Image (cartoon, rainbow, N blue to C red; front, side, top):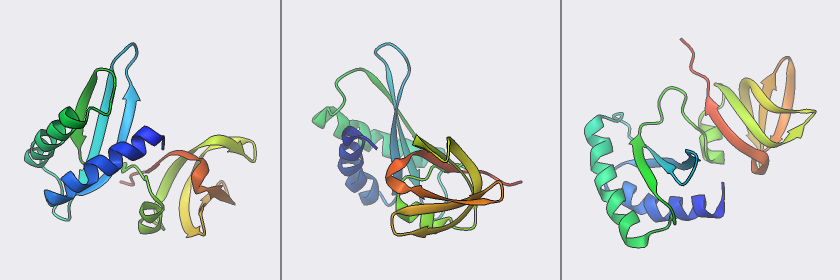
Length: 152
């Protein structure tokens, strides 16, 4: 997570929490040129409906307009984490031990950056994933992206 992503997370978490939701995470995606997509993931024990996204979007838009943390044009999108829920924090990894995950690292470990397998445990600041019959010890600070792999 970049410094700006951390700032956005810290700026938006109190707003989302005050509305009764969990802020799962914030992602900035470049859409080419000068446009950015700012995706805000929210959740609640009762699930997320479109009305929840609209409510959070309205409040978050106001906060972003006042603080103006993104220098260029952006599109705001508020959504539920979905079945392929992104994992942003060590707490998320702990919560989903025993689930299938896909993890992409910033730098290769054992000659690879992509791991899909069973999330075994979190130990210290490492995420242990069993993939292809081998347990991999993935440093949390090297994880670029991670999400659950839905099972049907």
